[in-house]
Amino acid sequence: MRPDAPIAEIARGVACYLCKNPCACDGRDAIARWWLAPGHVYGDADIERAMGLLVGRGLVREIHAVDGRVRYAMREGGLPGLQSLCRTGELPCGEWRAMGGR
Image (cartoon, rainbow, N blue to C red; front, side, top):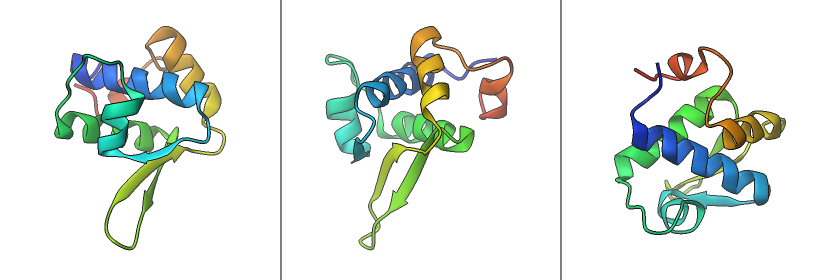
């Protein structure tokens, strides 16, 4: 099964953004403002869950700053999976469940 619709939308939006901007590295607030489609408002918890799913899949990495802030960037070797997610909205069979989807 897939995660909740907002989580899947956020994950796909992040994937598409990173495909176009592979050197991007931002925190949750910047992701909400710049990486996701304008006009959509997502809660912090939904963004964090979507990023956690992408991190867990090995497509995105977390970077923890000394001040406690967390930034996210494409993981080395993550481009093919991100391209697939961007193009189809799906990960290979069963991956949403493996990522913690319901």
